[in-house]
Image (cartoon, rainbow, N blue to C red; front, top):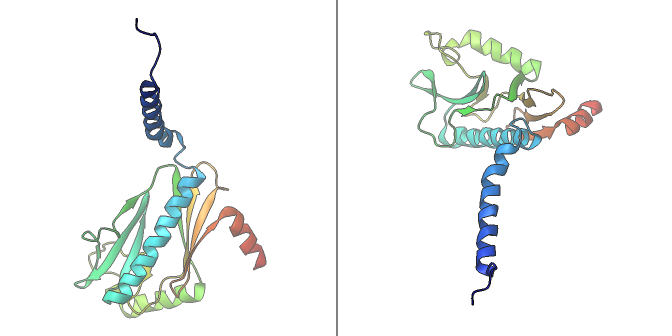
Length: 187
């Protein structure tokens, strides 16, 4: 006579299948502008800027980052013009979720004035005559970097953001909205 019940093996199999289904479905339930997503995107960008800075120093190449409506692209000064990096596996174009807004704010007005003066003196590095796009953020082979703040912000709630703070020396820090308020109040 056969008993009417489940074996331990059958119960374990069902639990494993439920676990796999949960692992697949759960990430899609998190909102696209969640704090975790903002933090991940900001940290990824910070890591890529550090990588680009190191690559520009090691290989003696001038690199840049151009911000688009929905993400950012890495560029290289090559053969007398700025070109999108296409062969680099890390420094490729990144497209952000529509729920994330990206704001680029150049820092240090003195540095910006010096950059503007350089643009007028040697326009070959900043435009290539054909009106093609140039970077917003420069990673020079000399080690200098455009000081700036790049904010990854929720499109639905401006109070939720992570800022990537970039210094001229190449130091890059990620700051949350709460930390940003504390560091700004110190002046």
